[in-house]
Length: 172
Length: 170
Image 1: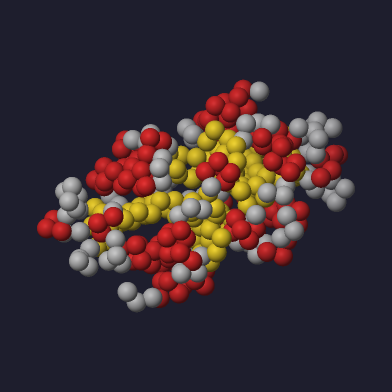
Image 2: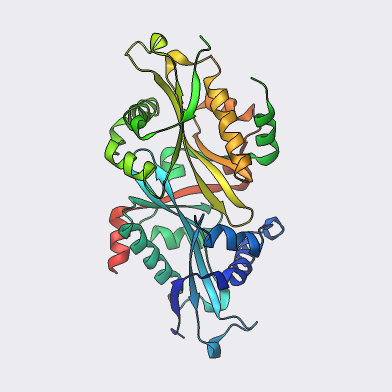
C-alpha cells in the first residue's frame, strides 16, 4: 500500500490532528497531559497569525484505518529564530499511525519538511527526541541529524504558568 | 545606578541587538558562529511576519557603557506551540552587559517576558541553558524553572542545511 498523499492541513483537519496528537502522546506515555482542544487548534493554526503549521498524510477511503480514519499521519512545525544564523524550522510533532508504517510516509513527510525549510531559507531543522526513543533516533541519524544536547551540552528548561504569574506579580 | 528603561526593540536597534548577540556568543565561547547580519535581523524581525521579538534595556546617555553604548541588555523571544497545551513563549537569547549587572535589569526583563507570556495566553516559557552555566541555572531555578531535560529525558537534535538539501533532493 503505497497509496497516500501529503498535503497542508486545513481547518477541517483539526479533529484528526488532535486525535493523532493524542495517539503520539500515548506512545510517549503522556496521554493524560493533552489538554489542547480542537477550538484552540483551529484558532491557533488557522487565524491571521498561525502559531503552527501542519502537513497531513491521507489515504483513500477504501484504504482507511481499522478504526475508520483516512488521515493517518501528520507533522506539526513552526519557525524559530537562532540569533547566530537566523530562521530555523522546528519540527514539533511527527507521527504515523502504526498500521501505516513501513510505506515511506514518514520519509516523505521529512522530505516535504526539508523542502519547506530550504524554500523558506531556514539554516537547519531542529527537534527534540526522547533519549529512550532509539528507533526515532536512528531514523533521524540516518538522515544526518546530530544530537546537539550531546555536542553542546544544552538542556531544555521550563517556567510554567503559575511561576510566570508569580514573577509577573513581583514588585521590583 | 538603577536608571534604565525596558522597551520593545525598534528597527533602529538592530545594530545593538547584533552587538549584544555577539557578546553573548563570546560568553558562550561560540562567537565565530554568529553569521547573522543586521540586514537579516531587520527583515526577519520588523517585516510583515516577525520571526522574533526583542525587549531591550536602555540607559541614559550620561550612564553609557565604557565603550559608549546606551542599549545594555536584551532578550530575544518568539512563540512556539506545544501540541499538548498550545502556545508557549520561547526565550532564545537573554543578556545584560557585564558592567550593568546587579541592578535588577535581568530580573525586570524576566518580569516583562513573564507578563508577555501570560498576556498572550502562553502556558509556559521555555528556554535552554548550557549545563555548565551554573549562575544562569540558579537565576532561573530561583524563579521556579525546572530542567525538562532531566525530568523528561528530552534531547535537542538538529538536521543542518546540507543534509536538508540532500533529503530534499532524494
